[in-house]
Amino acid sequence: MDLFLSTLNMSIASSFLFLLVLLLRRVLRGAGSTGFLYMLWLPLLFRMLVPYTLPSPASLFNLFSKNLATPGGMLISVEYFDPYQPVLQNVSGGEGLFTKQLLAVLAGVWGAVALALAAWVLVRYFALRQKLARGRSADLTALQPVFDRAAGGRRTPVVYSAAVSSPLVFGFFHPKVVLPAEMLDRREGTECILLHELIHVRRKDHIVIQLFTAAAILHWFNPLAWLARRLMVKDMEAACDARVLELLEPSRRVEYAQTLLDWADSRRHSMQYANFGQNDTKKRILNALNWKQLPRWAQTVLAVVICGVFACTLTNPVLAEGHYLPVSSPFVGDDQRENFRAAAARLIGALEAGDAAQLAALASMDPAYYEPVYAPFGGVRLQVKDAQLYCNSSRSAEVYLTVDVKEGGGIYSEGEGTLVARLTQTGYRAEPFVACLMPQKKYEDIRLLEDENEAVRLAVRLARNLQSSEAGAGFDAGGLPPVTVARVCMESAEQDKGEKPPFSKERMAQLAKEYFAIEGFFCDDPAVYDAASGTYFFDPGEELAYYPVEFTQTEDGQTTVSVESYRDPMSAFPQTQLQCRLTKVA
Image (tube, rainbow, N blue to C red; front, side, top):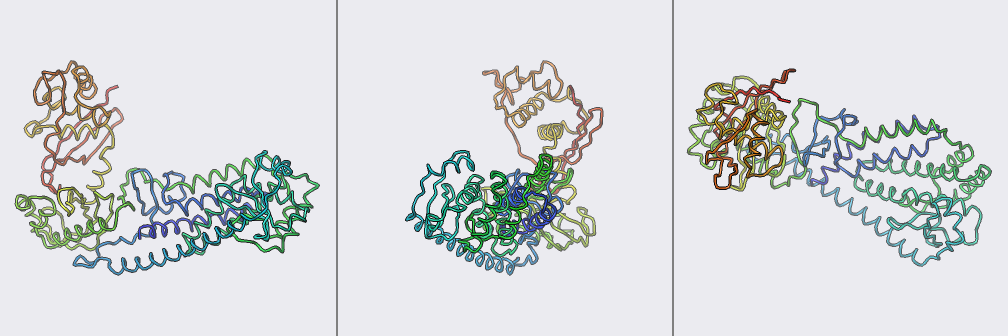
């Protein structure tokens, strides 16, 4: 079903792009730009076959960037239709059951029709291939002047066969030009036809048309896909005609037009192949008689326009600076997605019931210990009005809960708002844990600040390595315990610079000077220093949750970072807040 949903989103995106291509074709039509018109279809083909691409500020899809997906953190896809949203209309059971069943039926129908069409195309392809094997090969030596003119001397197999009624290019990786058997005794226009077909081969048009056939089969339910393929073939033939006319002497244009007219009544073998048969013959003849080569400046302008179209259509939208967007990866399987959905449903039930025991069970392997911690939730009366699930990966998910707090209990004020829960899947148990539950703004501010810059990362590491007794009052870098300085330096070197412990005394002195401006640093505490080897080692210690919640930076290089620590596994109740002021030293 994921493939069907991905295809559906690609079809919606490519439909927007198809309308743009139609507009550009109308604008550029009549400007002698047939080759450029043909190139306009290549971004559409890419969009119909590839769901992911790189982001760009120039992307046309920045206009439609409400929902984005970022699998792998680099490639992104536009999701115009997401059946998993909303995901929890009914937390008592059967969430989205009808939608899922309907989508399963539609996916089955789509898959069956696509497979049938693909089978039909493949059967016709191999049947024709078998017939062509009995064809008669042409003398390539006699055709060398045509190869020299059309393909720079490179030879392409030429076969005469009674299996085709009009000239065409057959094959994918190893193409061949196929001519009707009647052309053995018909020499008029042969050179023009061969030039036309060889240019198709040189430009890889036979590959483009096969890929467009595959795209049309994949999007068989979208009539615009079939229309796009038909119009692309017309533009491809017009572009090929223009290239032939460019190679021919002006006195032979009438001959080429006559050749088109002679083959106007021939039956087109199949739109699956690039061939010379009937295809808007009247317009092609008029173009041949009136063809004029574009001046260099016009070609340059059109090339710039095409490059701009490629930049706008081959890339996906970027996220606005300072805006957080939840991630929804298509690589999460249905079973794991259902696992996250079930955990989200249990969380909603526990919040609405104020069930501290259930909340503790969702957050920890030791619910009895943490049940008193979540007792304040018992004084809150809230209703979850909507829930959106975003499966970041098979290990994590985010749930956006739109809530209406009827009675505040010192945790959340009354009124409507949005909470965000982060779910994590570990190897400790089958059900996901709730690792975080915060108001939306606070959660998104934290996510935007995480790994924001070196100052934020340094402040979080400092907070993580401080002892509780050290964080109670103000201090400067020189007053920090040496163990804390050593741990922060080693963690920073490992995560920011890719260095691995152990660290020598000389390297530790360099790091302490770099991060804390401490000259001649040395620490002989056995918690971080091994006297026998004369090196420092790094022990992460106790794993607590530390989040940067505020970040300000002035022009003079002063940076202030506020870091909150959380001891409860759901990260719902901040325990301490450390404010760090850092100065960038050249």
